[in-house]
Image 1 (cartoon, rainbow, N blue to C red):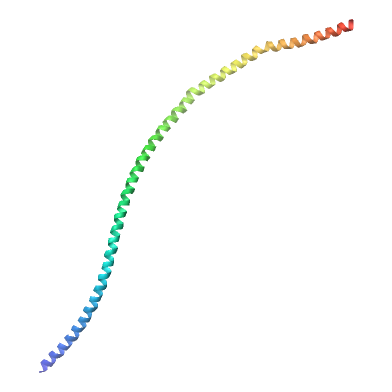
Image 2 (cartoon, rainbow, N blue to C red; image 1 turned 135 degrees about the vertical axis):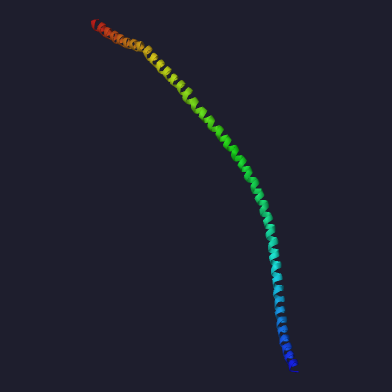
Amino acid sequence: KGDMESMKGDMESMKGDMESMKGDMKSMKGEMESMKGEMESVKSDMESMKGEMESMKGDMESMKGDMESMKSETQSIKKDLQEVKQKVTKMDLTMDHELRVNIQRVAEGHLDLSRILHDAMKPSNEVEMLSIKVRMLESDVRDLKEKLA
């Protein structure tokens, strides 16, 4: 009977422990439901992020294509710039070696022509001076004739 009482007490203790475990299990069940809701939210967020990542992947591919296009255009511009540099260098050399020499020749020819014209006009200047002197002498002769007359 003592053993029975002891067993009954143990059973009561176990019953209390079971009630406590039952409460803990209900609490855990509630927490699990809460976690389930949170997991659904996380799952939804992950799906949203997956969609955004796919969108970003598409954008990155588009940017990659744009970068390749820009790289190609840059290479084309570099090539054109090199051609322009070569043409400018060629024009500079042409100016230095041909145009400047020809301009100098024209200038020398102009100076020669100017000198020749000046020399050709010199006698004309002398003739003009003589003509002025003859008029003065004619005027003096007329004055003398009037005085003598």
